[in-house]
Amino acid sequence: MNYEPNSWGGEKGGPREAAEKGFHSFPTLEKGEKRRVRPETFADHYSQPSLFWRSMTEPEQRHIVSAFVFELSKVSTVAVRRRMLGHLANINPELGARVADGMGMTGQAEAIKPARPLVDMKPSPALSLVAKAQKTLEGRKVGVLVTDGSDGALVQALKAALKKAGAELQVVAPKVGGVALKGKGTLAADHQLAGGPSIFFDAVVVAPSPEGAAALAHDAAAIDGLRDAFGHLKVIGAVDAARSLLDRAGVKPDKGVVTLHGPKDAAAFVNAAKNGRVWDREPSVRPVM
Image (cartoon, rainbow, N blue to C red; front, side):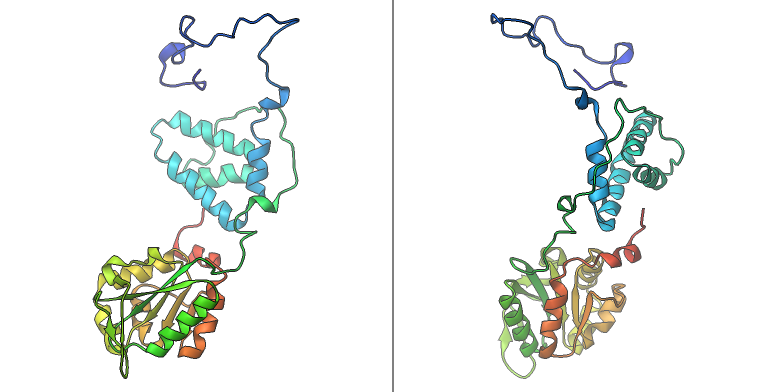
């Protein structure tokens, strides 16, 4: 049977069960009554989602609100939006209010009376991914953007520190053939710049030479990749020569932006990257709902 009320079924409320082809209980002989019943607690639709909401960290709650605003804003039937806002208000008044504000529908939630009173349970940290996330880089990938003239010693120090932490360093260069390093030697590339965006990596390092940084300042792939990394709250390591690139991409200094003056700073970058996403940055890169 469809959910009710159903706005697509006309006066009859949508398709109904079919007596000829619908479900029938198997005709077995039983002693006593045979019934299909639900316990009274089945009517409690709000206690578990309320527990889930209250167990989330603030960044997770922001994402839940944003997800509801995104999805419900695509619903063309206003009555459905109002009804959903009523359900969210029953789950948690703050949740309902934040979603309604994000949709520009404050005060329009439908009043829905719960069939059973909400059970106030103690929040469970085990339900939160952020709260229980370990500080680790194990199994992660870090991308380093290099150009001709990049510091090979820095790249090697990063590679060694990341390997020790259980992570992998991959090289991104303007050309897939690699780069000529400062002094002597070459460095092979794993990705060509346009084909190795920051979304491929859990954290990124920007390590061009001064001349390379000047050239990258006119490359949309470099600027967009940095902007995305910052907007996706990733830890960013950058050499001094990359400052102009960071400025063009709108990357602002915070605890997730690590300056690399030389190979000795590789450990500081790895320690910062172990913390995962920089959640404190989020209010500066998108509206907080």
